[in-house]
Structures are given as C-alpha cells and as structure tokens.
Image (cartoon, rainbow, N blue to C red):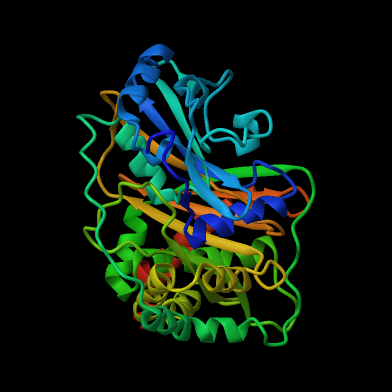
Length: 416
C-alpha cells in the first residue's frame, strides 16, 4: 500500500478488538504475542533491523496503522521506521506481560506490532513479538515472525481472491451461532469481574506425549484433553458457586480454511462458548469436555464465524462477538495453537515457544497454550485481584498427569 493509497476498512474482528481499547483499564491489555527461545549467540540489533526492513515491503499489512475516526480502518504509516518496531529489551529473558515489554503506552500513530531481543543465558536469547489483537491472532503472529526472520526469502503475496458477499451465507452463520447467543440471555449468576492494576503472567509445560497417549486411548483430541485438564485446574484455582455443575468459558476457533493463503497476517478467529464441567473427577471431566466441545460442534462454529466474517454486515458480526464474549457472562478464555514444524529464526533453532496472552476487559484469566516440538506450554495472564495464575498452570500440569493416569494407566473407558 502506497502512502497516498486510500484507507482500507477494517474487518469486523479488527474493528471489534480496536473498540475494546476504550474499555481496557490498561492500554497494553490488547497486546498479545509469543516469546521464542533461540539457541546461539544473540544477533546484533542492526542485523535484525536490516532483515526486517528488507522483508516489510511497501505493500505489507505490517506497515499499516489503525485509525479511529468515522469508523476503524487501516492506513499506511507514511513515516514507517523499522527502528521503532525492532528493539532490545534489557534484563533477563523469559515471557513477560505486555506492559513490561512495552514499558509505556503504545504509540497509536505506529503500526501495532513490535520485536524485542533480550538475553536469556550463556548460549541462548529470547525474541519477543507483540501485536495488537485487532491486527493478529496467535497463529498469524507465528507466521509473521517466520516471514520476517525465518530462513529463505519471504514468498510473494498471493493475489487476493475475488469474492462476492452473500447475505444468505451470513444469515446461515448467524443461525448456526444462535444457540450460543440465546444461552447468554439465560438466567445465571454473574461471572466474576477482573480488575486491579497488576498483571500476573505464569507458564508451565507438560509433555505432549501424555496428551497424545490419552488421545489414542480415548478418541478425544489433544485439545480436548488440554481443556479437560484446564477444567480440573480451574476448579482448584477459582471454584464456581455452590450448586453449579459447569463453568462457561470462551474458546477461540481458527476460521482459516486448509491451504488458504494468509499473507495479510490478520486476526481470523471466532469464539465458541463451552460449558466446562465443575467438580468432576479427571476421567469424567474429559468425557464432559468431549460432549461440550466435540469435533462437530467446533467445526460448525468455525464455518459459522467464517460465513459471518465474510458476508454479514460489520455491525451485525461485531454485536454477535460482543454478546458471546460479554465479561459479565464469560470471564475466562482458553485458547491454544500448534506450531507443527521446528522453527529456524535468523539461522538458529528455536527450542521453546511461550505465549503472552492478552486480557479482555473484565476477564479474570486468559490462558493460551502453545504446542511445539515435544511439549505443550501453557501461559495464563490475570489481573491482580484474583488468585495467582501460577497456581492455575501448576494445577493444569497436575491435572494432565491425573487424566493420563485415569485413561492410560488406569481403567477408565473411552471418552466418547
């Protein structure tokens, strides 16, 4: 996009997440990203800036900033400066809340993303990548870092596919989501509201082998095993009110189609409400999660959100998103991504990938798991007025072992 090109309207997800800035108590709460632990000596800052500058061409969405005037749209930053987006982070490495990395309010006049380099150990270093959630989701963040710093030249962008909007398909997506919408109007105790100035971030990993063995034994997916462990962990971390048998959470689903080009590095998620079991034994928790977040239901939500995003008016899609994620009804979001291939950044191997979740206004917790190589690494971000998320991720790790013991080493039957 040239600097004199007309602004491009934001899609409904970008618009919806951009508007959340007005409700967030901290301007960094809408920033999310990843930390890549890279083996070898830390490269010079100038070398990283040169490589990024060479790969962020004039047509890249990474040159665009969010503008809020008569709506929300993207426009080219005429003063784009790679030095603003690639910096060093002093101090020890490791995942930090976005506010600790940014060390101040984000500049709204700049494209909303950045790369930071930090020391990690005698033979490793960390690469932090953060972006506004209006710009990207976690899967797009991985693709961005690989495009900017991975081996080889960045492939040429695929030509945009011609498509026409169909309100029939948009209406079909809306109808598919109507059960979730109707549930938000059912009587229920209000969800706890997260507030307070602190931001607490915690991580814990568990062997991917345990999830796969449970999956083979029960027929559940790896992600369903992960959600079942989180259901048990949430019970230990913050129990629901007495007499309640479930807890409503939001679970993002990736709406990208298999093999679809993803050159705009955009946010392509939808949201599914899931009733996680409360008070269940680990073996029973997995069966309940398989019933509540089965493949068919997940696929139906994925198609519905894609139809809504591609075809419904922005104001309609935005209202659906806001209703389903109303923090008075859902105050916990549980997400996960899988990085399938080993990563090479700046010619060196990546040993671990750790998420830095964002925090929706009013939420008590956002947990994001990254499956990479032989482990799943869970990160949880919470405000300071709730129990420490370190207790949540520790309980999740224990629950993974408990579920594995019940379904692989014990006598529990299939999960479905």
